[in-house]
Length: 417
RNA sequence: GGGGGGGUUCCCGAGCGGUCAAAGGGAACAGACUGUAAAUCUGUCGGCGUACGCCUUCGGAGGUUCGAAUCCUCCCCCCCCCA
Image (cartoon, rainbow, N blue to C red; front, side, top):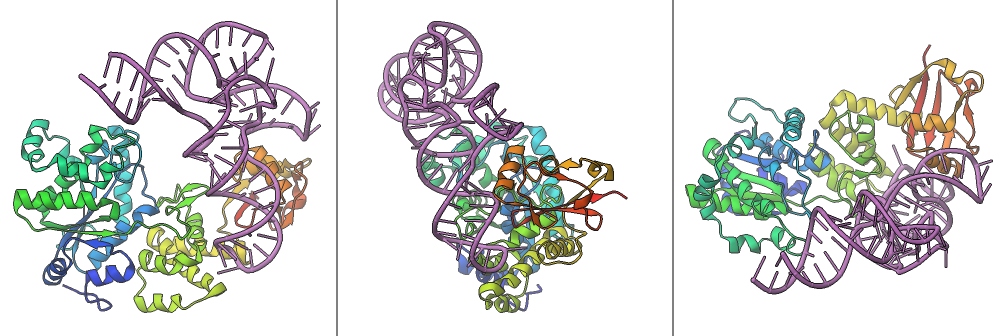
């Protein structure tokens, strides 16, 4: 086992980085991790074709596990997604069709493979679809094998169930914890998996799995939860005006992704550096000393590191350059842009409002008008006050027209030569 | 199956025949202040039009009315109590 020099062990690093909320049996798990290669897993819901940054914590948690010489399993819930986890939700989630799930699985697999080293080696990670064993399981057989180990009394006592007593909980969802517990059992049987990590809202489900493993296989397995990560402002991670922050470059460009991290709240910088980057503790502690405006440096590092982790070093550099260009000066090549024929700007030119809409900077002309009235639109660095303003060749500088919305959104209209 | 209460604009939540694109709060966006931060203050916050205007929206479909988110009918969904 190649224990990392920075930390005496996996748990120590998880604690230091802020991944550690609760553990079922910390001393025993610590010993186990120190004495042998442990297989641990985390689950991912294929609710969309791409994961978003909310999934980053479990992904990086698995990554650390692998870095400590253990074997990570990412389980993708092709089976459980058919049911839907009621934990932390107040309403029944929209049902996914099999085709949806199939498509989502493919997308998510590809993404997970960018973080974890997957393969056949002893500490190579695995990606497994729980649909493999859930889909063909017969109901009666399942009830007799697994259902008999669950007490309805206990299930009703779970927080995830209790909080739904008011609004209602379908029998379908009520079964979710059993299915998740069954996953743990199957992974333990098939792969010797002995650890499940998950968000603290998963504590109940994880405990169910541990109980099941003990009852059925007399296996001692462990659970570890991380805190649910929210921003200092109390928002869920990744909530922006444009919607979720996705890991897929097609949904959230590396530039926007980078900007998300640069714009985090001051109070979140230290916590996020520990959680979302792999930087060594010494380096992070250095950055944590920064105060006031200097925190921007730390945010730059945070953004660079996370973007590199998700999109690769090259994309991260590109995003950073674009950000520098937009906010400082420098090469503007990487700023979001669209290409246009020179003719569009000849004569009368192109209505600014139309340009704002067609580039997707605003969703309607009304919104564009509002922005202009409020002085939130700049063309070539000048505030535009006339909502009827048109873009003409006069606005072109260096072969492009520079649009700016508010302080942070930039777009260039490139002229085709 | 019976009885009761509900479904309102991104969210919560008022409205209960015209003065309603619909109070209030939150979120969001813009401006000021800053550090591409927070807090604060100001403004905006369905769509189209320069505008008095027009169009779409209050679970769905019909109806009453000069006029409906508001009244009636049927349907769908949710919660509570009883079976």
